[in-house]
Length: 260
Length: 278
Ligand SMILES: Nc1ncnc2c1ncn2[C@@H]1O[C@H](COP(=O)(O)OP(=O)(O)OP(=O)(O)O)[C@@H](O)[C@H]1O
Ligand SMILES: [Mg+2]
Image 1 (cartoon, rainbow over the protein chains, first blue to last red):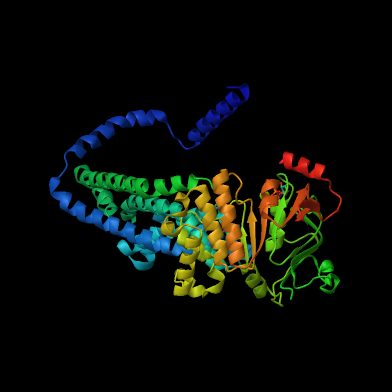
Image 2: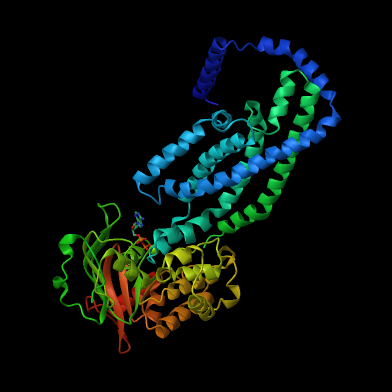
């Protein structure tokens, strides 16, 4: 390591210390708080098995919300991503679309959920709308980036045949970017399940509603049941999406590496 | 008679090309080309290609061979001079231009196949300019187009690989797919950029024979770029030799001798030297 990078590391540490002084972030408080954590942990071991039924139905609702939100979000995102790709459109088309997409991504989904609770009332529907907003913003961005990264060779070759722009999109751009899309959708669903578990915090449906309420009333044992269910379900979904990825995506991408 | 005419406006006049005849399919007059507007990668290219010719373009790497094909297929416009491609289609508005492009079967150096679709789907792309846009969006092709594609796949020897994903094919098979897609365009002109480079001798010959047969069968004019001058002289009627962006020779066989039609005074000695260079 050279003196210059030492200096940079030193500076970063100094800045962190100064900033935490301002935020009253005191490591001593963290250490003092450890016994409190032990109390919660102990109460959490006193789980109430009777609640597993309720937990099961509420996680199912969560998964439903995430699923619908992901599917609808992707369906909206795809056409938008075509309009947002710089290699397919003029500046006047892609620039405003990109601005809108960036705006939807600016807010975390929980803020969208609050907005939609105000609009359509408490319940899963508000949560679904929030998931859709977030999914549109993200999938459209990932997708226009992979459209822009599509190999220019087939694009040039097929354009020279004299096809229309939509034929080019349909027969070259979509198939060439599809392997990425599947992996992006899986990732998004995975992510949306996690997101949806916390949307209940603002009353937008799903399992988070139970967790926040039990925590509010210091019933950590009951909350623990729901958190355990979330943990198990998220792990299962993770495992399934790894399997799907291995089966379909890895294979396709290996194929893509074969040079002509 | 002139369907494609490219060049900047000062060089666009049709009358200046009074020597163009129906026998000529391609006419270039003092063509210059550049990618950045400063450095010319093609200079003073003048050539005319007679309908039905098997024409070859050879030259070292970076000499401008691929650029020359891009000028002919309309993907690139010359900075100076004119490129005229002619096949009995009188208009040059935008739509006509696209229709004209559809009649040029172009096989780029990298083939430009769509890797994640089947061989048959790649071949059907050649028919896109002819089929309804709405139907083709849902991959609905008329029966006669599908059977035409199958016929062409048989011609190139890939009938049993029609449903195979294109990325799974070997290098030689991919070249056959690219040829099939070009033939599916029902082209008048076939352009192929180094289609047999990097192949072993046996496969290279198979592919060359395939192209020559297809050219004869569909009555095409073929323009093929080769790295290797021997290949050009063996298969083509005419061989343009490009060096540093300029056409230095245009070789052909007259009697039992190789002659240069450009300068008319190349010695057999010089031709032998060209042979050993490549
Ligand atoms: N897209 C491009 N942008 C800028 N310069 C380019 C581009 N394509 C080619 N060139 C340049 O133009 C010159 C001629 O390139 P071209 O591809 O026509 O050569 P070539 O004779 O086909 O070579 P090779 O045998 O290696 O394929 C080269 O100097 C190359 O660097
Ligand atoms: Mg080249």
